[in-house]
Every structure is written in C-alpha cells, then in structure tokens.
Image (tube, rainbow, N blue to C red; front, side, top):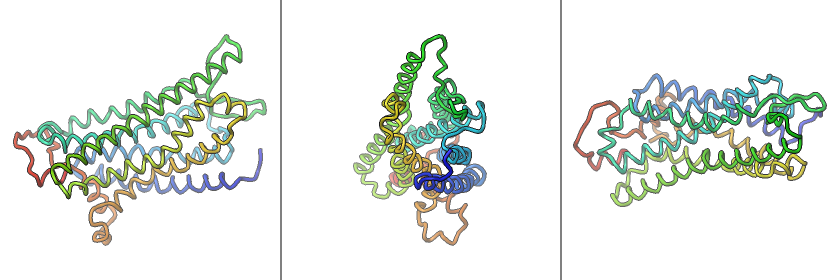
Length: 334
C-alpha cells in the first residue's frame, strides 16, 4: 500500500476530523438542552430526534476516517461492516425525513391552526416521529442484505457489496445482477431518500409563504428561518453527493471496469461536504436564534433554548382541546 497521501485525502481526513469533533460536541449540547432543560413539546421533540441522528452519524466518523486512512481497507470485521454502514445510512435518511416531518408540522400549524390547536399533541407526535426512523431503516436494508467483508487477490479486506450473494451461477451473471441491483438501489435511494422529502419540504415552504403573503403576516418569517436554514443547508451539503452516488450506481459496470474514475473522485470529495452537514445544525440554532447579538452574554444552552423554542407553535402540546381559533398574533408566532 502507498505510504504518501494525496492532497484530497489529507483534506478529507482533516475535514472529517473537524466534523466529528464539532458534530459530537454541538449535537450533544442540543440533546442536553432539548432533552433535559426544555419543556417537552412537539417542536423540541422533532429537533431532539434530528440532533440524535446527527450525533450518531458524527460518532461513527472516526471509524470511517481510519478506513479512509487505510485507503478503503476494512479492519473491523463483518459484523461492524454491516452495523456501521447501517448506522450511517439510517441516520442520513432519518435526518432528511425528520426535516420533512418538521416542515409538515410547520405547514399544518400555519394552514390549519384550529385543527393543530385541537389535535397537535405530544402523545401523537411521539407515535408519528417513529415513521421517519422506520423509513430510514427500510432504505438501509440493502446494506444488511448485501454488504459484507470481501478479500481481494492481494489479501486485503474491504467492506463492500458481496457479489457471491447469488450462489450456483456464473461470475458474469453475478456481475450482471450486481450492476442491476446497484442501479435499482441507487434510484430508489435517490428518489425516496432524497428527492421525495426535499420536494415535501419545498412544497411546505411554498404553502407557508403563500399563507403569509395572503394574511399579511410580516413577522411570520422569523420563526421559520431556523427550519429554512436547516433544510437549505441539508440540500446544499447533500445534493452533490446524492447526484454523484446516483451516477456511480447507474454507471456501476463502467466504474468497475476502470472507466469514469472521475465519478469515484467526486463521490470521495462531495462526501466531505455532506458529512459536514451533521455538525451544522447546532451552529444554525445559535447564530439564527432571535436577537443573537443581544444574547451573546448569556450561556450557550440558553441561546440554544431560545433558538429551539422560537419555532414552536402556540398550539397545545398536551391533550387539552380548544375550539376557539387562534388570533392573528398567534398565527404570526407559528
């Protein structure tokens, strides 16, 4: 194995290290504030789950840094091959599904405030919040089924797609099934795991913006800026990698044959930007919190608490019902 590292490899390792440290510390702080310091509401529950997804993603980064330093070789064994990749994929998909879930919650509060006031309860949210995690686990099933440790002709061990999954058929047919499976998995993940939730987020933003414009609720954009920044940062960070991964899956045969090596390089580089997203949300909560400059003298937990509560709707998070519609002022705080 080569001893020297290229500039892209060094840059990637450094950025992953920074992402790991910031992601663990920042998301742990959000988990502490949203989970233990603040009153449990639908909004804090959503952001708590988002922080959990980013925290666990950041926590496994050191293991992948070792793999990158070893240029892809896998030193952890078959069980951790499946576990770490499932954790990575699950928390990735859970993040985007949770952001879509938060956007839907905001949209319902603004478009149907009376229904939200009477039915938007914490108990219901605890049940529905499981759905994004279940969807994320389902999209991670191909890793559980197909991924394992593979030894090449040089005796080096890698964690990769096991083409020997199909027994009693020729090597060429195995390869063909592998390329077909990769293409199908790539399309499903891109459509269901990225395009669909990002479309839901965009539609919700459009509906909320139309409601704000029609009602003349000038101040209504303030509580939405944290969610807008979270969704926009996720799209900016993850779209390049998602596109490159899709191309990599669709061109699996050509990449396997040594063609289009640029795709592999792009996947490698864009993954750095995508991973960095796992440490961005705590920074956004702090810097986009209302009156940030005025509150710089306060403790960081207090700043986070204000940032997370300013997005919460005034609709009840308990089982208390109310038939009276919210006032214009209440709509402006949603």
